[in-house]
Length: 231
Image (cartoon, rainbow, N blue to C red):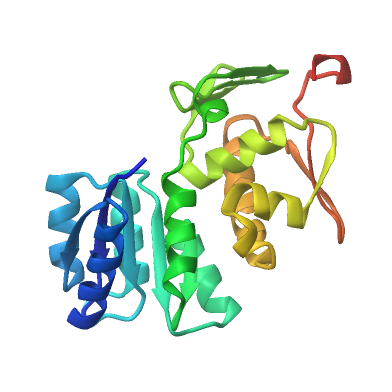
């Protein structure tokens, strides 16, 4: 379904191209040419997705991402000419949900936009109870040992996919494809960052590690108090 997209980039040519391409797909688009303006638009407009450049004068895209993440869980897609893993990890650690390297094809960008805005029926109508966990997709809520855990949209999608295959090893490629789309199947840094973030939030409540690493293969979700027969 079309949604509201905020594009933040100090290059006016980029914002014009992005607005034209996204508007043509039915999205409601607003643009900002600096981070401070972007924050103001974000607060008053509440977009469904933010697309921001990484390198901007004044406040960087990483700093902007941190500022936006403090204000909500809206998906954030970062654009950058930098293709270094360390730069990607820094952006993801700051709260970004995705990272696209410039120059990029508009069809790739649109595919990623659709992936972030899409809400499949199975994601909005089911509930899972596994051991310590209750996952309510309708309300987009997760609780562990009765305590709510606040996850970003991509963290939520990652944990839900693992939970729907509890006890089974999910390969890196399968997880990346399921959560970020086929275009991200070769971005292992995504998993390292997001699994680490989810683990930290879950362990803060219980001190237990529910997501096991299977070296060179993938990850396995094993909730405390869960048995194979519950799956």
